[in-house]
Length: 245
Length: 226
Image 1 (cartoon, chains in turn yellow, red):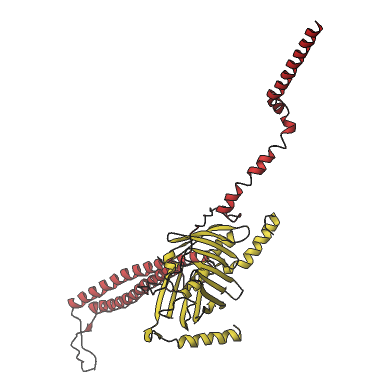
Image 2: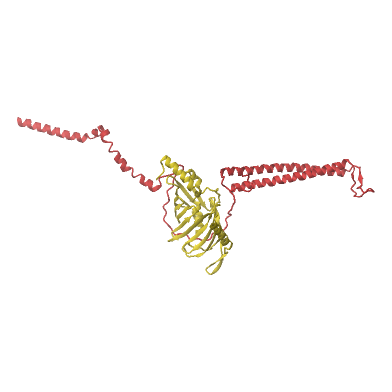
């Protein structure tokens, strides 16, 4: 851990230690909220959250609490800052303390856009979350899902060669998460099953919000498979002549 | 006469011409069937080329991505119109029994089994220790039953020694029997618990080992053996 990382960690700990327990809403002192959310496979705790954050682009400028937990085997911890026209999240992922920065904002009250990087290696996040659609990419994975009942169903494109079915259960539960928690959970959740999709190039992505909490092992996330497995895939594909240029 | 011959010739020529003109009209099939090998090849590709582009269109609409995993079908993305984003309200139940675990549930369960086994085995070994102490006491009492022993008065004789008696004391024998039986009972129970605890511990350890082999990168509990 270099000096800047250590200083940032100390700063976060200091902020965490001094986190306010109350906030002012409509001129009244209101206690901040501690909430737990679970799913398949994740568990997060939102601590000292603003009780009425509204839209992430709603103009609120205040500390938004902390979000920590385990998503798809990734230990995550974020600080939330409501920055007026967007909500900014900074934090770390996993034991390697990978630096992560995410922004979430609403566009025309139709689209919730989650952008940023999931880890310090540059796993980019660019998701367009709508009530009836989820589109975009997390790392090299591309998604297109549409809502059907309480599910989002569609596909995830892992490489030019590999496309798998994708299902997100608990669509209603997804919208029970505050926007900042959505921005933390959804991108990390969409990296699940890296062992199968990137590693073995088979299977499908099935994750969920709400219901019974499940657990995923360490290092199964796609962020641990993007580099080595993709290179292997490209090499194997080029040998067999099936890789798209 | 010549005129009649000429008319006949003209009629015959006209009839022959009609017959020839009829033959080609009915004949096309035979030539088509007789010369298909030479003339048809260019034709089949045309309908094939004209019809082929049609199926790909729906295929592209249903599954935009050509590459698929062999094991799973790619579902069609539902085409649902956009709606306004819902307003967020705090959930009525803030804590839903979330478990923040250091290790996976499987390992945590195996660790609990290991700990239960350790506790049971520990109690068993403690009972064996107590049984040993009781057995030593029973041996001491047995000595007292068959040999001169303190008379229980607590008095000392003129030499300053505790007064002894050689009279058989049935209460000592009863006490020896009670202590001996307790010792044997404890040995039995303690041995059973020690062995059972060890077996349970081994089951838990085996589960941890199995999980670790399947998920070598997962965190393990303290003293996991790895």
